[in-house]
Image (cartoon, rainbow over all chains, first blue to last red; front, side, top):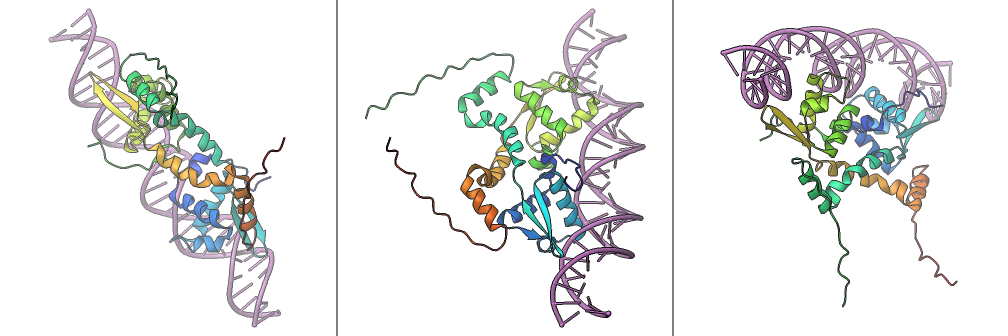
Length: 123
Length: 123
DNA sequence: TTTACATAAAACCAAAAGGTGTTATATCAT
DNA sequence: ATGATATAACACCTTTTGGTTTTATGTAAA
């Protein structure tokens, strides 16, 4: 259904700084190719290649309107990155988990952390 | 201080599936190079290159112990990815923001959304 | 119907990425 | 001391990436 159906990995799509900047631009508003190109020091052809990669990762969609092709942001696939990240958040969100991680990965110690209820506020 | 000080971008470091798998392994526990290698179908040399890239992105640290070099996860730089993502979360966390985005990027309409207090429940 | 505009498609190129194999060096166990 | 283990350092190869220029095609406007 999509143009190339080449299925680019979203992690790879966002690896390039130019492509991240394109996403940021499209987050503000939809833009035709030439308007996008004007924000970069590279050729329009190069920008189009980046757009194709983003489209193959389903991060943008392009629709032809007259002689222009309008691209817009399609942020859905970023949830995959968010999910991936959430696994690692335990290592910095929770100081206890971090401690546990530090201790356990530093040798063969095994820890079990029992987090007691916080004290009731008795104002 | 670090081996190469080549400063690899974290987005690029996590772009490769093999490197993401390495991170996942090291999240469980620290491992020497050979133990990491045994999880992949590629050569130890190739794994070492991936480890160097991860180390240059400050996502792992390696410390020599005897004749082994033990690598461990250093998840700090992932916060940069999290921060980057948080900008785009508005587009899927909040249905109203999403609607606003859809409408505004679809033409030159300008919208202001006023979210009224939810109705008091009057059971 | 020209002329200008906006994109598309193709050929090409240099550098980086991801991989290999070989050789050397340090450490642990006999 | 010797041999096995674990890593380091090279040299090399192939494919992908990010970029270029050139040529063609479709659309809008004069």
